[in-house]
Length: 102
Image 1 (cartoon, helix red, strand yellow):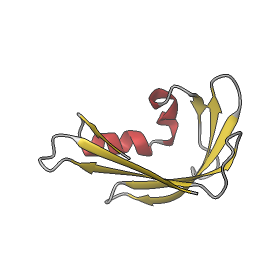
Image 2: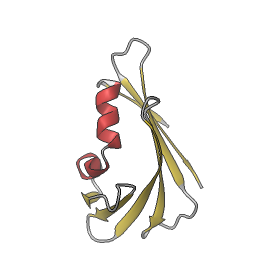
Image 3: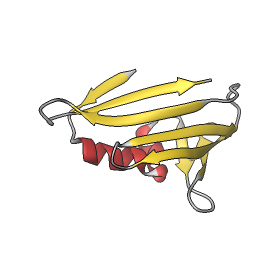
């Protein structure tokens, strides 16, 4: 799945890679913080519940982030989501590509 945004790819990459930014970007997210060295992020949900995500991979130059869900109310197992931030050919827009494997 991909989405084109009227934003610069590097700016969008900083927002997506900022583990604390999820509540400002997703209506179901209420609060987020990192634990330990920043690889684990509990994400409090509006209405209750917590999803715990772990950062699995970061490739700064390629603007790629991969996360897994390690705990929470969502009935998934062995899920890894990858977000890649690219740019439109002329550099005027960011292209966000999302994928998940289960």
